[in-house]
Length: 308
Image 1 (cartoon, rainbow, N blue to C red):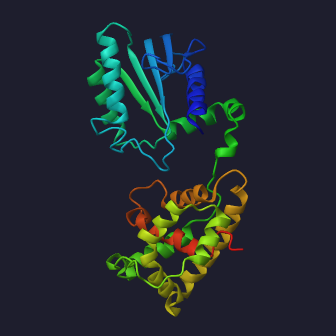
Image 2 (image 1 turned 60 degrees about the horizontal axis):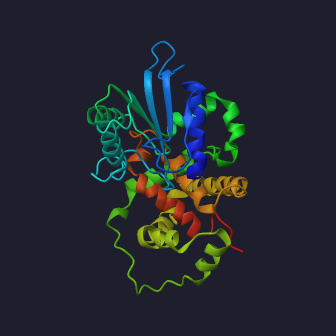
Image 3 (image 1 turned 120 degrees about the horizontal axis):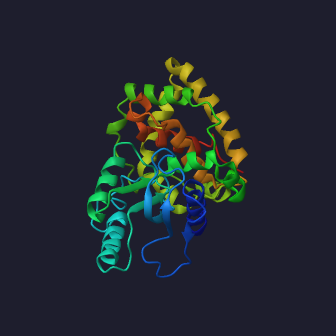
């Protein structure tokens, strides 16, 4: 979603969980707020114990893929998104230009259970208020799912990339590769290495892969492709080669299903995210850098993506 649509969605969600009295504001000097509500919320954070008073609502949208609330530019740095807003709101509050009891910031960044209480405490302490919260991508998804009319109103189905491919096979392949090779010691590819990228440039044009993303593949993934190739061609790994081939076939179908509404790079990033999964204790999560390498290998090897 673009920034304006995201802000409109946030206000619509607030209308549902607080009440119709949520105000939104046109672009300009908005006094540090995208939305404002005064009263008792209908169901935030719950119907049994709703917050009340004056609410400041802000929407912070990012176009960075896989951005997180843990990123320094959102939370930790002095010039981070949160610290800039804290400074601005504190100045307005101290100058009696604005008065509020509750602060809510919505973002399309991922929000982990570990960083959430740290951000809440940081906001409460520095804004001098009792109630503050940050709502990340996961809760936004839940709110939308609980209010299906928002899906239709904002045409959200076109943004969804559901996990509709079987990822267990490729996870097994990647984990075994990580355990049985010295891949991590592979040196970078030298600039004068004898690689001909002309055919790949044609492939990039067919798939809409820009130079920045392709440079990422060359700089960080290409060095491991020879070892992946050797691993998959080793007769002892025939079972895992079949798993790789089956996954590649599934992903070709997955790509085709979503090309009408998403760019190829967006689909690639979704594939990587789905394979890694959300379980930070899983074996695949511990070698998640290799997931990106393997998916890039699939593209380089023409197992996924258009080639003619």
